[in-house]
Length: 133
Image 1 (cartoon, helix red, strand yellow):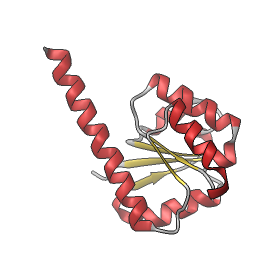
Image 2 (cartoon, rainbow, N blue to C red):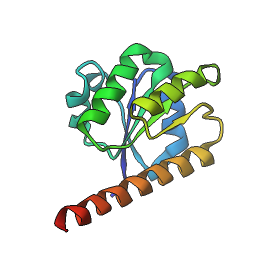
Image 3 (tube, rainbow, N blue to C red):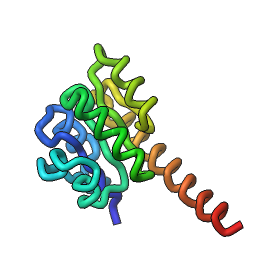
């Protein structure tokens, strides 16, 4: 089963780049229905990873990032333009696991996705072991 990646918002140019970069290795899910309703509607997609375009969504994106992190351990990679690196850092501080400023290197993007998913899997396994001790 391929990992499911939710890309928000679905209309951004960055979303198209991500879908092309990830290719067939990941199942990419997009759609406006996951954007407007906050974290609970985003969870309907049952993603393994969320790409959140902070440059396009701005304050709403930061709010959504905060809400998602408060309610779920699903990893979040924030998308920001090169000129908005401070926005990416803010995203990290409120809950994103990583941020990307340049989507022109598909192999780097895939490596970041694999690393974030690997860390997430390891964290969940550790939490389960800790809970049984």
